[in-house]
Length: 212
Image 1 (spheres, one colour):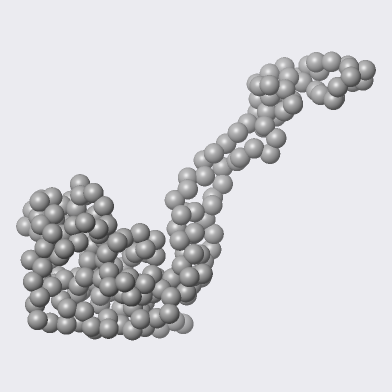
Image 2 (cartoon, helix red, strand yellow):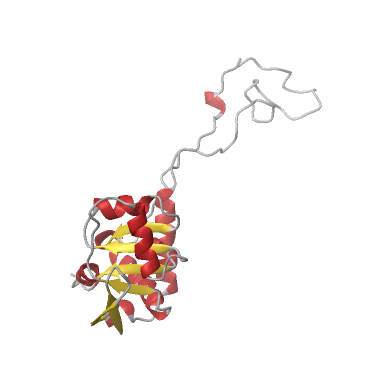
């Protein structure tokens, strides 16, 4: 699949770049995408929820009534879960929601997400660029020139660029990501990917790496 390379003014440079078919042209695997997104969302959870058990409630341990003859269920002290203000039975405890996912499955999920974007013609390739200073106006002009200002944009860079990041930080529905740390969730969450030429090389190196 060939894509025109644009400059930051939105003009066609007259050059074309071929997207790697093994990354941008595969049959997407929806289940791999599901697992990868599920893991990503699980890793975002703090897991700090906590309710007190019976032994953690502050209160007297004196038995409130007789063992038998009261006409109701047996209960012990005032910390009993059947009483108002008592403990909670099997309540939430701090935990880690993360789970293991094989590297091959994660790589397949990323390739599938990128293939979906390629099928939707939602990938814009631009020349490598930078801003002289952090200016939100420069990023807004970039989006307008590329005709993506009305969409949720993910700009993929080959390496960290503070000026570009700070310029995009205050723009609604705009994010900046590094090609090396691109994940399935961020790709699917974006309406359009603005990818630099060097970023494509990084993505190729990572997702076509020979598996041991």
